[in-house]
Amino acid sequence: MRNALVSLLLLIAVPSQAVEPTPFRWPSHEAIPARISDGAVIANISLDAWQSLYKTDLRTRRDYLCRLVLTTGLSELSKAVIHRTRPNGADMQSFWSEHTAIASMAARSPLSASLAVTVGWGRLASGAHYQTDVGVGATIGLIARRVCR
Image (cartoon, rainbow, N blue to C red):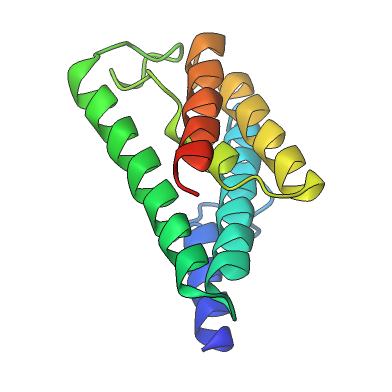
């Protein structure tokens, strides 16, 4: 089971159609913060899932699923209702940062809190979100953490 989870995480983290032979070389410097942010959110949610689902009681598992469903559900609903263009002009799903909300929802320790800060920085530096998007996303994640316990 552990090997399957590691394989799944590697498939998600490594780009499927890499242009360069190494995953650490990107076509432009603008892609670097986005990759760092994506890696940090994957690490943070994986750490939280492992801590919540592996050898824990039913209540801890239920609380984790409640946080995850609440955070992603509210994020998707807000993106469907509020059409705000991203700073880089990619699409109209800027408000709020779902990456930051999920990373904040998963923050349980100083390590995962620093990963959540890294996710917020990466979303800002890559031009995917405004500061208010990241701030509201972090707040939603923390509220979900407070509600689902």
